[in-house]
View 1 (tube, one colour):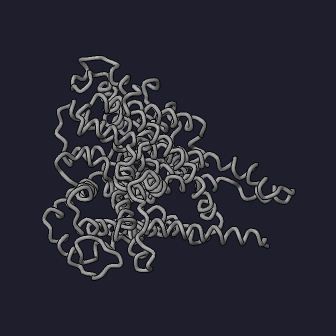
View 2: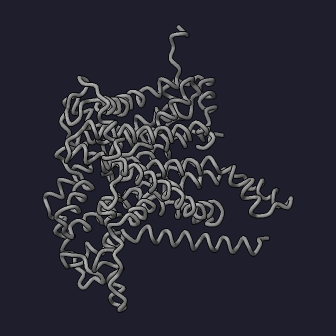
Length: 285
Length: 267
């Protein structure tokens, strides 16, 4: 009897596991199956070919450029966000005092506003006759330079959208650094830079890594920024996938692109997560 | 005793955070201005303010249907995800079991997944199953992404939960259901409420999943996007602002409920 008994953990996990099996793994398997179907067909599970993958890697095709753009933008975005978010994460732990929770809520809230609405607000900020242009014109300095519909503004949009995903894991990471240890190191004569490099940074690293992982993964999958702000001056991987599935009606090619993207994201995620103890990061005592 | 350098660092950090916050809310304010100006196309400085586009938006039958769809989806997602995530979080944080490490990592994968691709993958899967997409399938799609998020939110509360209380109750002869109702649930209420709030707001604002999995049915973010691409009217920023304000309202309401529960528990 005892041998047949399922552990309580597994029993409680099973509804979620079954749901994710049907709602997450099964769709993924379907995508993988489609990526091996003959190009521009819907013959899933009946044909097998590697033509879709070789089309992606064919240098005469321009599809691979979208991978370069997405990965490049994601890398720059992650580095910029790490620099932008670090002082704020520090402030949330040490400088804001009783306002810390209010400041956190102010940073969380935009997550609940559809990203289209926020990005479109930037369009209205930068567009001709918009806020920047209007202000410069009334000062007699106009017209404002054209910044919309360029790769630069796409990057700006990504930095803007993914800030909370860097900030909160980072804040969590910094809160794991015991203040006593920092004080002790300073008392023993460690310089500010040395204490930061030898104590604060390594101890906060799990949180910082999760933040960098989250932002880079989300940024590799970015599409709305490139479409709304970038005006398609940059085609990202996900945009290419969308095009293959909609206008081009080439589901197998779209599926092959999606599989490659998933491999990149999955590899990155597993590489980072396998180094971390989630129980500790999330605050198990 | 605080050094001069530390005070200077704190000043810098405050200014920087204020500056970044300003940036974060700038586009939201621009949108609000565009919805409140009288002209068909946005011109800054606004020449004449009017509530005309707000009134038209509220009166529009199309918009009413959208709001109804979005609300129905968000409410269903909230209810189902909280139930699933409650048990999921206990497995995540409360119990030690053999597959737990793997389970924790599997659960995080949908959060890291690009939502547009997830939506397309679900579309393929539904196509293979012969299901026609509608707002009902959008509920399922939202759940795939939101259940893991809510599980994490509740799990954080579970981590600070003292499992010895349950064991003590067992020793004193309490039944399973009694323990669940009188100990587990009340102690985890703040986490459950936060999870529900997250679920509702994330579903309410979600665009990429709805785009591919709602079929012919539209939600508020989906409609806004289609009008941004073609057929802009000031109803777009007006509805966007209303949607933002209602999200803020829900957040305040939810926050008040959570604060109330916390305070009552401390008594």
